[in-house]
Length: 468
Image 1 (cartoon, one colour):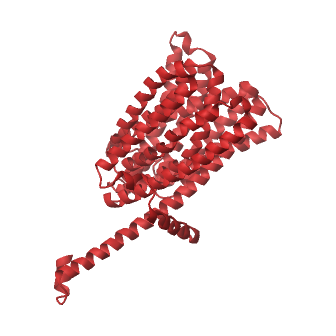
Image 2: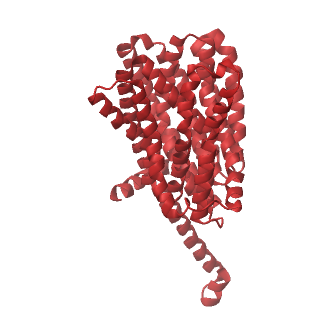
Image 3: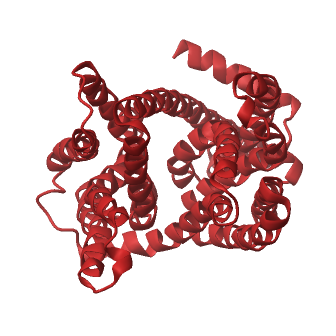
């Protein structure tokens, strides 16, 4: 391009032509980065709003279930949710992120092939927990014939639908159709709440009808999701060997990191349940529930960051990820201070029995803030096609959580669990930062600390978003 400019304009030096070309290229890159940044900002704001609405609907559903079913009914519905959500984490197998990566990288797979590779594996994998439990219950083992596993059978019957909806939502994410993505992710919660309201108005308190409402809220979105699949042709065709090979070659590597991270999020609760009385678990669950609200911002960013990184070159991806990582850390840190102050004032007044949760919140907050780092960087690594790099930090943090909590909880109780959990998040984040900055021309300061020009950039994004 430079030599052509020199030949076409002989009165200008080749160096001058090169500089002009470089400046135009730089302006083009900056414009492209700003365009993608604005898109991420808009989409993550929409995802955040949808998550807040899901939270409101979820709180309403919990209240109505407790009102209609009492403690026993509430516990049974919670067990269904716990079994099904845990199974979903394991059987979705990372097929959704794989679809985003291959769609945005234009790897030669058609939309029909990607759709088919989402549908059929999701349904087949979704039936695995139910089939496995059905086989185990035929064995002469008393532990699989308790009422607990009766509930697990019902919960696992919903897993195929949940898996399909979960993975299909990524197809909308890949196509930048955030409305469809939010609708599928929120569909069960939004449907369950009005069904419960109907039962409340009708004064129906039978547990079987509460369970039926939960099953319907799980399967109805999956059946409706089949309509766009049918239009795309994925329902009527089987996935090709090439599309399956591409999907699973990426998916299993992404899935390993996601499962390990999920285990790290939950292992402290499991060990508290093993070592401490139920009262302590209730107090600790309030603390982690409140601090977990701080992740709404980084999770909203990470969900929409994946397709944009997958569709960008390395330089653009570095700029975009660094900017939104700084923004996520800063916003989470500010919100954590507000949460700490409000919890210190409100919990002793409104929930005096939960007063010990205040100290737990203060201990958990440093780790909760830095956890926003690896939530954003994990999405970046998946978007670059390097999902296996998310495995080591999560494994190291999980091992610290298991060993540390096993030692600290019997000796120091809930405080020990909170301290070890916060340290494990710090370890996880530091390993992510080390790996990210070592392989790219991005400094730790640039990745984590807000800079002066960021304020102007955020203002520009807000103005553009307002005009949009």
